[in-house]
Length: 335
Ligand code: P6P
Image (cartoon, rainbow, N blue to C red; front, side, top):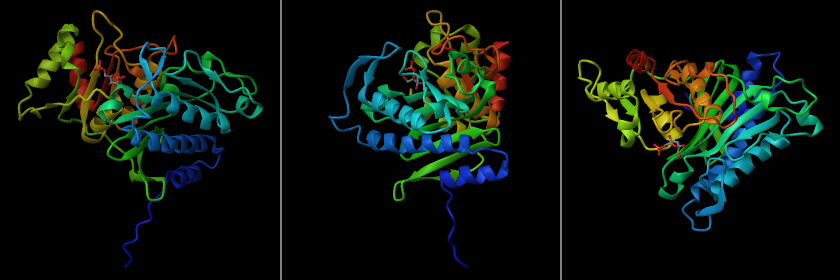
């Protein structure tokens, strides 16, 4: 008997998904394939990032007040470009752009979706060859088709996302995305230049051994957060420990590991920065959606992250996300 196993590509998977929804127009599937195409182009450059001509500051400063590296700009241009030239997206909100990018050609004005993204998160890690990633969030527009999208289309609570995902440029390049039907992971096969289904129907373990937080500012966290971190450090074998503290400072890398193996990721607020560092719309909401579809939980320390009504495109939020059982232990500490 042949041991040939048909490997399903991202394109085949999204088209097969269409078969499960006969009424679907294929617009969302097309948008996800567009993102996959841009990701392949970014991957080529990220893999070359060690070359001097790629590295180095671009010289400009983005809305976050951070040095912008060339790859940030390149990645932003790739994703915005494929979305602008597709027929599914009416506009983009990006970490790299102060305001929303409105696609005002006739086809785009009649498109159903908007995309929020961090085109290259963790770019400060490029120079030291740590895995970095792209994060994206997809909403159905709420303003009428046929007219340019407005900020209202982007400032929706995360629970209304129709899809969310990330690409991790690491030892292998993966695209992981969630829809209401679940979470699936695709690994790039360089020999054919296609993302291939490698992690079908991802579920995150109810408990894990990893807790991820920046210990360097431990004493700046609220007492209840410190109490939970102390509990993590004191976990006995009988209580499911001992835990391991794993924090690489690249959100996509930390959350991808914890998604697959189980764990909890924390970026709390501090007295100086009560809303922490991470962005609600294109970092925390997408991961909150992915974690929940994989059986985990995500919050801002007070409420489900996907319930938060955004007020600004680049607003920050404290963020806690991961295995359901570990999040519930955290919640009991925060009450
Ligand atoms: P800190 C990278 O700059 C990033 O935005 C996330 O990817 C990462 O989780 C976080 O910042 C790390 O921040 O303050 O611990 O260095």
